[in-house]
Image (cartoon, rainbow, N blue to C red; front, side, top):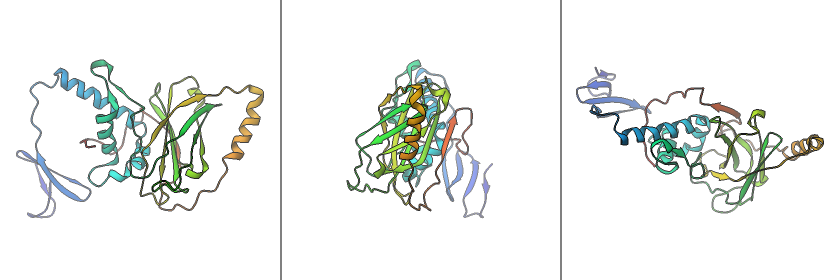
Length: 263
C-alpha cells in the first residue's frame, strides 16, 4: 500500500500496483516494481552475488572512512553506494569461488584533489609509517592538505585509520596497529583531503616493507618517532574530526540497506 504524505499532488512511499514510491534526500522518486526472478540461482546470478558480497565485506569494515573518501559523489547517491559501484566495476576480480578484491586497484577515496605519486609504507614495532614526496603546488595540491591513512587487515577483514594524520607538507605520518596484527597480511592506503573538506584525492595503495628493530633499540626508536610526529594542524572547523578507529565485520553497517551502482 502506498502512503501519500502531502496530499494528492505530493510524493508517496510504498507500493501502488507495479510502481514503488520512495523518498531520498528530501525528494520523492518512483520506480517500477522489481520483477520476480524465476530462477534465482543460475551460475551467473550466483557469481554476481558473490562479487557483491566480496565488495560489501571490504567496504563495510571502512564505512566511516568511505563517507569522507567518496564525499564528492554524494549528489545522486550515498558515498557508500558510490564506493560499491567503483569497487564492483574496477576492483573485484575472478569468478566462481575465486572472487577476490584486487587491493592495488581498490580506491578507499576518490575525488578531484591532486594525489601524491611517490610514497611507501614501513611497519615496525606495531606501527605503520607512511612516507611520501611532497608535491604541493602541483595542480590543486596544497601544503595544508590533510593526509588520510588506512591499513586494512586481509586476514581479519578489519581496518584501522586516521582521517587527520598529518599535512601534505609533513611528508610522513604514523598509525598505531593492534599488537595481534604482527603476522597478518596488511594493505596500506594514503589519501588527502583539502582543508575546507570539499575535495578529496584518489587513494593510492603503498608498498609495505617490514623493519625489524632489536629489543634494546625499541625504546630509543619510539621516543624519536614521538618527537618527530608532533605538529599543530591548522584550524579545520569544516573538516571531519580526527579519529583512529578499528572496524571489523562483526559490526553491521547502519543506514545501508539497498544499493545501486554507478562509476
